[in-house]
Amino acid sequence: AYRKGGYHAVRIGDPFSGGRYIAQRKLGWGQFSTVWLAYDTLTSNYVALKIQKSAQQFAQAALHEIEFLSAAADGDVDNSKCVVRLIDHFKHIGPNGQHLCMVLEFLGDSLLRLIRYNRYKGLKMNKVREICRCILTGLDYLHCELGMIHSDLKPENILLCSTIDPAKDPVRSGLTPILEKPEGNANGGGSTMNLIEKKLKRRAKRAVAKISERRVSMVGEETSSKTERSLDGIDMRCKVVDFGNACWADKQFAEEIQTRQYRAPEVILKSGYSFSVDMWSFGCTAFELVTGDMLFAPKEGDGYGEDEDHLALMMELLGKMPRKIAIGGARSKDYFDRHGDLKRIRRLKYWSLDRLLIDKYKLPETEAKEFAEFVTSILEFAPEKRPTAQQCLEHPWMNVKTENDADNVDAQMNNLQIKG
Ligand code: ATP
Ligand code: MG
Ligand code: MG
Image 1 (tube, helix red, strand yellow):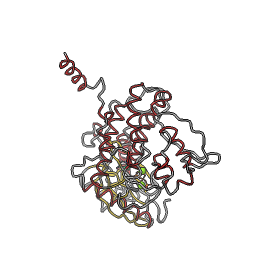
Image 2: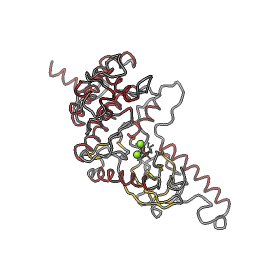
Image 3: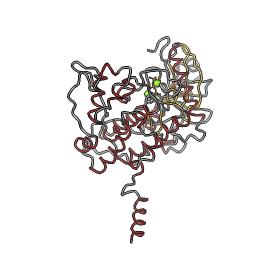
Image 4: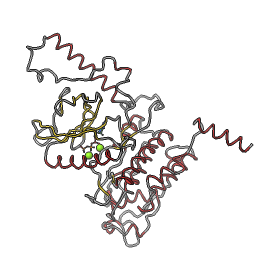
């Protein structure tokens, strides 16, 4: 895809926007873009540089994303709303055409990588709570203050905040950003620099790349080692990213939104949607953080499609869909008969969320029940019955205090004293 209209090939040390940003290392990529760690020479900070493919439709998509990122940044003066910050954007002309580039605050690993790192065993409840608080803060901001629907919430699109400040990083000694193009590209060959100097520079560059790698990858790679891994030291603050599919509640662009496993029932049935589709995805994400497994992973089967399997999985866990909702969408007739029963999948195996958490995931009973109550209250088939992000923040589960929480010990002592 590194051809006309496609990705822009980047080499370490490449300058962008008149030399303000210097490419350091590749962070990730998507269908439309590659994302690079870059050094901002103006502010002396590291940033994430998202470089869009150049063809017209990709440029269009980037402009869309910039519109939503800008709106989010404008309303969040002190950068506290748990949404990734757009710092700058510009055009970059390369051999494959003109690429729109977004400069974003540099964040850490995605929650998907965090789950993988934990070998799909799920995270401790308190970590999940911290993460949920950030996601809900972000959603509340997008929904209530901006009127924006994210439409693609999932672990991959939530990034941990980088806890390491490059300026205070202990490994920083020797950490100099790469401010030059690699040789052969810079000042046209060997004459200006002698060979030894070049070799030293090259070695320094490799070292820098390694340090950047260590720092960027806070969570690390999944390994097969049997040793228990502790996330105790890791701060669980995170931010919502990827506004490529966002829309305004009163100006929607697509009927089919969201990544399959996180898609709300009203989207499958085409009954119209609003902010509450993000709440559905949030419920699915919370479950995945606790268990390491996707809540719904539909597959097409003998005589039925992925959509019908998805609806069946939802009902097996959440109970039968109310008839009015089941038959109320433009696509309802494809899946439901007039009684509100699925046409092709007749025998459902009902299993409640708390039993699933206890029996399959071996969660302690109280913990399982409290969490199941929280998630089940969000995964309402009727979109208007789902709680808002703000209501979720006030839910008892979000405000549970645990025994090893110092404040709670104090609170319990106080309680005892009052009672005594
Ligand atoms: P596309 O639209 O091109 O298909 P995408 O919309 O999924 O891709 P993003 O989710 O914005 O693109 O970014 C792709 C990946 O790049 C992320 O999953 C993450 O690994 C990395 N990334 C994106 N933004 C940042 C950031 N601000 N800081 C660090 N890494 C980032
Ligand atoms: Mg993404
Ligand atoms: Mg995108």
